[in-house]
Image (cartoon, rainbow, N blue to C red; front, side, top):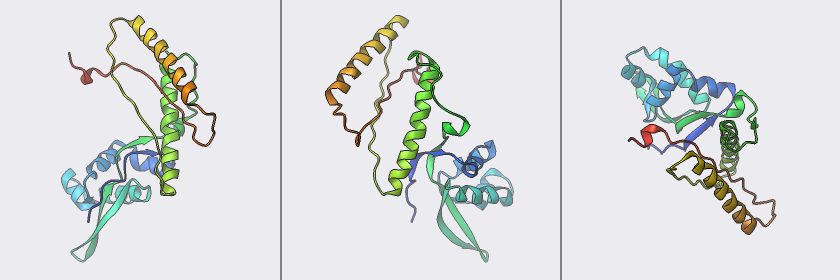
Length: 197
């Protein structure tokens, strides 16, 4: 029986997990394992020797990037069929340094990047701790696309949004410490391919 993948996005930290995910060859092998396959099947698809795939296969399994799906007898040996444990893999931003914002300017790209990096790191850790306790991490995400006529409208929009968020915080914040949430709202230009002219 083949089960579904555990998570949509896996955030990796630690040398063994990083080594299993980062090189272009290993990333390509990991992408091949979105559907269950053995080292032999991946090697056949890529046109290379099984030995070149087998060691990274085992290394990724030890790192938790792939999981065993099935053991198949094949010509007197046992073939291991594995599958990627997530649709996407990200590197925890904390791996490469402190993600404290370099600036408090809410219009600075560094402030948005640092806040987003902290969110990746914090939510991934909390999700793992919740899963270890067989609990669900309750989060929410809101996304919207906005088209502005002039650059000055961006600042006016951000000011109005900040005022509304402050009103909502005042209305809902009870001061309790056991159910506190960090709300992150950021904006950046949409990629061109998302909105072709």
